[in-house]
Length: 92
Image (cartoon, rainbow, N blue to C red; front, side):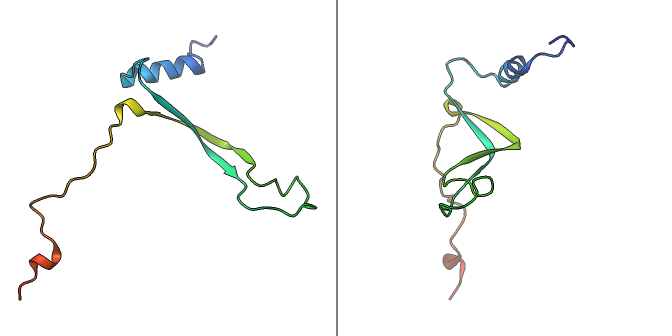
């Protein structure tokens, strides 16, 4: 950019570098801040106000989520052996 600030892709590259992500990492890119029509509308409805079922509208404050799937291992939770169930703590 002319003002010395990196452009959009340059800023993204800087952020990925700061995170230590590599080109071989598997990324998932999603868009948040959207509205999806979840109900069917009457066929005579004004399309300006009643969008067709399943229509996606991107809001002015929409955002992008980038998830590094390669660095997010799924580790199932394990029970803590030091904790006892409530019914085991009750004395008869």
